[in-house]
Length: 263
Image (tube, rainbow, N blue to C red):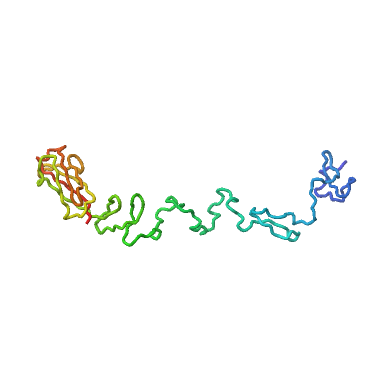
C-alpha cells in the first residue's frame, strides 16, 4: 500500500525529508504548470544593499508627509503627517462633522461675515447683552424697513407713530363733535381747531358717528357713508359731510373723533 496525503500528519514533512530534485544553489521550488520542480526565481527584486529599513527614499515635496528615522534596521525610515500637512484640499467634502471639532475651538475669526443668520440662532437666546446699545434714552424700533435706534422717548400713556421718516411720540385723544353748531345744506364742512390740545395732529380717524334725533340716534362705523376728513394744518382738521346716505340737515350728527396729538 502506498502512502497518500491522508496518511501524512500535518507539518510532519520537514526539510530533511525533501529530495533535492537536482536543484542548484539559489533555485526555488516552483510549479511549472504540470509539476513542482526547482527553478530560478525571476519575479522577485533583490535587496540592493541588504539593509531592511531604508527603502523609502523621501517624502513627496509639499505632499503633506514627512520622513523620520535614519534608514537602518534599528531605525528604519517611516512616513508620518507633517505639521500643518492636512490642508483643505486634502479633506474630503462633508468629512468634518461636529465630532472632529474640539469644544470651543471655533472662534469669531473662523466664522465668515454675515454667516450667522436668524435660522442659526435659537429662539429666546438673544439677551440684552448681545444687542449693540444706542444712546441713552433711545428705543429700538424699525425705520424704513430696518431695525434702528430712535431718539424718540415716549412718556407714560403716549404711543409711537411713524410719520414717514421717523417715529414720534404722541397722545391719543378723543373729541365729540356735534352738528348742532354746523347745520347747513349738504354737502357742508366742519373746520376744527385743535390747537388747545395739539401742537401737531399726526394721525386721525373717525371712531364712529351717530345721526338722528335724540335719543334715537343711529350709530355707524367711521370712514363710511357720507363722512370724510382731512388734516388741513399742524393742528386743524376739516370734516366733510356729503349727504350721500342721509339728509343730514334734518338730523343732529354726533362724531367721535380720535387723533394722535403731539405736543
